[in-house]
Length: 306
Ligand code: ATP
Image (cartoon, rainbow, N blue to C red):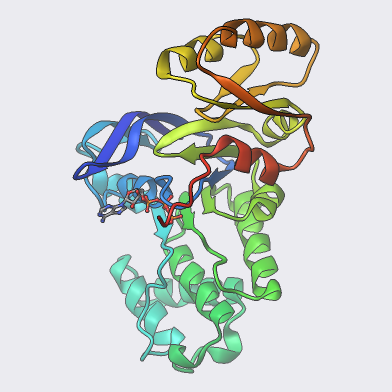
């Protein structure tokens, strides 16, 4: 459904996406995970043609971003991380305005607005100014605006930031429902492992603009049963040799040896490759089946705000 090949984007010297190749399956909910600055927002903005890329190919629903951007925008919608509506207006006025931007008017607009309002459970607040809404109601309105155009592809960028538990549950249920009932392909960018674990069919973990882990949810969670070696001092060549070993995933700070019958021999091969090199093993851990733990281990540790 969405195919990216060798996608790169830098802001000046800062690489945001680094030769990224990825596929998001049609009809699936893909959880897009990554620490601050991993490149999630940049990726979603490029997919909507909001931000230009430096290199690479992007195809969404069969349409190439080069030349078919209008078609891509017709079938897809981004619900952005920043709340994007007019606070001084009511929800009805906002929905009507954004609906008209989607080319809707008259009965079609009313029907779509009715659907979006019901989906967002905002019926009782429709004529109240949005600035009086709680954080959760604002997030729900943000999502409702995204649903107005009945997209085939929905990108959600941190849709539950700052909401209470009820609105969070509601948002997750709504996403699952539109995916199941309307077959909408969803890419769900989030920091919250537990949410992603609940809602996603597939998982992609990005770090520093690159994919560090991807696969079906259960396969990735099986990685959480892997053996993890904390390793420092691997250069690019060594990293390449370690990654060539079957069943092994590696980043600059961790080597993950997948669970399964080949695990012991893969461990032996990793140790042989590392022996006599500058690399230092500082820890070994058996899997805990926690996505959060896996995530923290395979993404680089420095605080991203520094
Ligand atoms: P977050 O979870 O914090 O939103 P993210 O995974 O969405 O992070 P991006 O916002 O895409 O990551 O940022 C990727 C990298 O690009 C970061 O290093 C960030 O500092 C940098 N970056 C993003 N936008 C700009 C910009 N407009 N100008 C300069 N650098 C930018």
